[in-house]
Every structure is written in structure tokens, then in C-alpha cells.
Length: 313
Image (cartoon, rainbow, N blue to C red):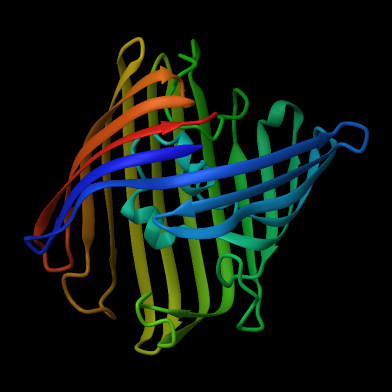
């Protein structure tokens, strides 16, 4: 898998990026043992010049109604992050997901489901630290995701490429709790660490796929005890896609997040984007582009333009 991106972006009225880069690559090994009903998955990736092991896990599915995963994977929390990077409608995930998504982590997850997966539940216990890192705060993160799919599961691939003849709907509620998290607020200062405690968060999510129309919405809330006190945050995402031609899809995204009075004023930020996809061969070969206005903490709107081509061999 590979993605090449042309991007121009300004922040605070100052041009911070212009040019072409190799946005992401993936090298994936996936093996299946039908006798033992297991899968082994290994993924090596580079994102913006960083090399790391992404997903690496063993999945055991002894029955259609139960599964067990052990290893490092996307934490089963909100749909936008569970969906793999190369299966998105726009070139990247939303700002809201960057704020509230639980990223990849090392742990164990057990899933149960009813017939045809109309009801699903996934419970997990994770390091709660960071990608490919040891647990540095002596606590663990727990998660629970519940989903209702009245017409069967909606695949974790954005856009209604299947042109579902009947509406396919998924409604999910997920929660996470982490007793303590130690991390660097500024990636440029990795030794300048802060600690959050009693981190509680939840997301309510709805998804629709029908006749080329795709709608995904997420509402996030999070409370955590920080050095400045208990802070509550909220986030919202709405993304709508519609096929206007057999292989051409238009996409609209509105995303925002903010915090309560414990934070400084004007902390709300937003993303307003319109874009499109040309699916040359579904998600395996596509051309994507979008134009967005990003609202900064001071209320200023900054433009961003992206054009990306991605391919899965």
C-alpha cells in the first residue's frame, strides 16, 4: 500500500507546507490457519518519514459468535479510527479523531456477537501508553464498544461503493477509562512530560449506507484530571458522501471540538471540508482531493488543499 500527497496548508496566515511527499506506506503480512481458526497479521508502515510496526496481532475465531485478539491493533473505539487509513473517503482522518481517537495500542480484546452480527460487543484491556511502547505509567486502559446493526454489519470502509439496495445502519456506543496517562504535549519536547489521571471518555456513533449515500456521525465527550484541574472536552463529526457518477463521489465533512470553562477561552477548533474521490478500482486505486478551512483556537480560519493518490497492490 502507498499514498502520495500534494498539500498546501497555512496556519495563522503563514504558509507552513507546500509540496509533494510520500504520505504513507504499508507492508502487510496476513496469514490464515483454517484448522486452528486463527489469523496472524503483521504491518510495517511509514507515515510522514517515521518507521514503525503498526498492527501486529493474533486473532482466534473459534465460532461466528466469539473472537479473541492478542497483540497491537487499532483500539476498537470510534469508527473513524477503526477504519484503516487507505479506506477513507478524504485524504486523512478528521481533527476530532486526532483529538479523541485512542490510536493503536498493545493489549487483548474479546468480541461476542449474535446471529448475523446484528448485535456486537467488544471489550478490551490495553497498555494505554503509546504505539510500540512499554506501559510507562503502571496502569491499564479498558474499553467497551457496543454496536447494533439491524441489517448486518457495516464494513469499516468509508463510502457506499456497494450501492446498498436497502438501508444499512449501524449505531454504536463506546467508552474508555484510563487511570493515568503520561505523555509529551509537544512532540518537539519529548522529555517535557505531563500526567492526566482518571481519564473517562465516551462516543456515540451512527452510520448509514444506502444507494451510494454514506453518512457517518460521531459525538465525543471526555473528562480528565489535569494539572490545572478537571477538564471536560467535547467533539463532533459529520461526514456525508454521495456518488454523482459511477466512480465519482462527492464528500462533505464538518468537525469540531472544544473544552469547558476550566480551559482558556476560545478553545473550540473546527474543520470544514469539501472533497471528492475518483475510484479507479474501488479503494484499491483511487484519487482523492479536498479543500478545507481549519478554525484555530483564536478563531482564525486557515486554508488547506490536498490531492492524494493511493494504491493497494
